Amino acid sequence: MPSPALRVLVAGAGVAGLELALALHDLAGTGVELTLLESAPDFVYLPTTVAEPFGGSSTRRPVASLLPAGARLVVDRLAAVDVAAHEVVTQADRLSVAVRDIAA
Image 1: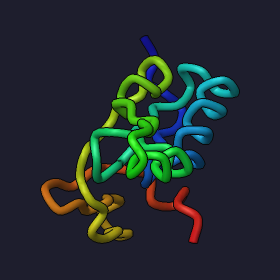
Image 2: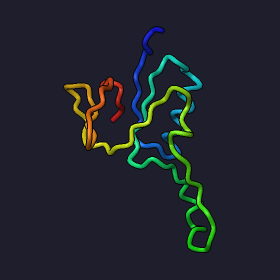
Image 3: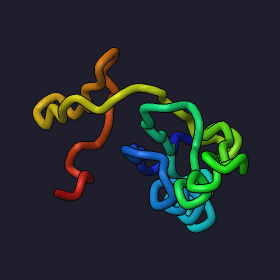
Image 4: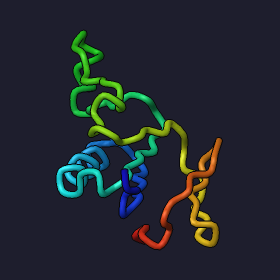
């Protein structure tokens, strides 16, 4: 199997990050190696949390269950971007990325 044309790291798996991952997967399919970096393993839809104090439930799901096929989840916090090394530095690791593709 040929390697993907582009590696993409999405920092944050909130609504926007998940929508980006799903749209990118729809548009590029296997042409993109997709990694999501999120500090928590669960996605929480914040508008529903207002019901919790009154006995209601919020929408909580494992982030991994919401990702498109083939996408990878890294549960960690972004610490820095090492442009020279083409790496994203997290609190626990270093992730190799195409830093030139990171928008400022």
